[in-house]
Image 1 (cartoon, rainbow, N blue to C red):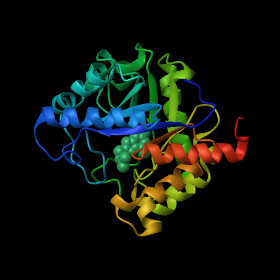
Image 2 (image 1 turned 120 degrees about the vertical axis):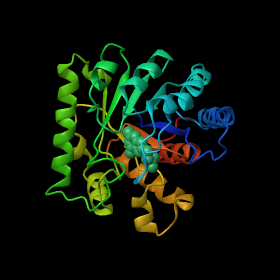
Image 3 (image 1 turned 90 degrees about the vertical axis):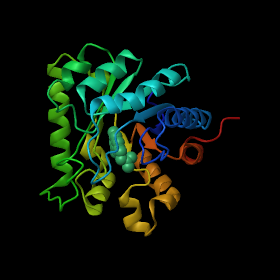
Image 4 (image 1 turned 90 degrees about the horizontal axis):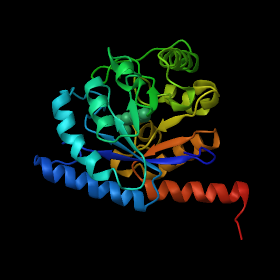
Length: 268
Ligand code: 7PJ
């Protein structure tokens, strides 16, 4: 994909938290319908997730995660945009790739035993994200000496591990992991210094949408963080972010179009 303008990645959750009806088919159908709407709204790619990774969330077994996401991947294979799958589990990675996924988005940074082997030979794109600790406990008073340098170091080492496994540089995307073992102050420092945090060698992916760092500044609950999320996405774009992972695709696309018109003019 061209990375000349920031791409918008639409979030497709297939978790009971977001689709509270317990019926599996209903849940998959809802997710697919929502995903198709996001594509109509201008999503350049979709990120399908079957495990909630919010702070304090409990782990989901691989077979349950696959029951949730496989029907959704299969239904969306022909939707016109590449499909990313948000998972840390090597078994889920393999099955998702076999079902047609184009990208694996691992908040664990491909650190699980077997994760790199699961993706190495497929040719898929890989998003390697920084996290401190694990989702259940990561927000228990995270401490850094220098958050930008420590995130950069983690991402550099992670990318090195992928390269040493024979993975081409062109497949790799790096993400500073907003909200994953970081205070609001850490998150805003990372966003302000994005080029230093992610470096210049690989494209970057940012997940800022509706996160607590937006609530920390606006005082608003997750359901009312649209304006703050769009502002954060734009701040990322201004600093050179390549992929913006968002819930609100239409509004983010509008903001990026207006920003682009200001910077580059409107074509006649
Ligand atoms: C992220 C993610 C993120 C990447 C989630 C949420 C939590 N994957 N998955 N980056 N966040 N790469 O969306 O609030 O920031 S789940």
